[in-house]
Image 1: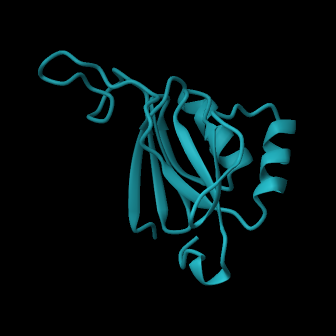
Image 2: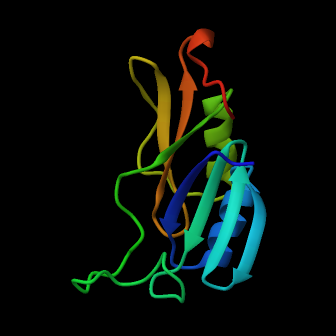
Length: 134
């Protein structure tokens, strides 16, 4: 069972399911309507909602703002070999926001889902820095 949930607003739920399941190792657990789905990967539950769809996730705010994809907030997926993951995704035509960068804890790159929501792929520098849940 997932212990952390993240909701992403996406333009097309079916495209997002294909991206996350086909490229990033998620499993579809629920897709009861064209505007809503739930996916899992390890302890992470990813909730996908289309803007303006029925239900709460894509509804307009009281001030009239409508949820939209994109932005800079993201979740991070740890990978064993960042270069191999990047090569595989690039060959599949997946878009990136940047090239691989090195930081104090490891190397990372930002991948865009089909709606422009970022996902950070992260390879820790030291084995002891590896995340405990995948």
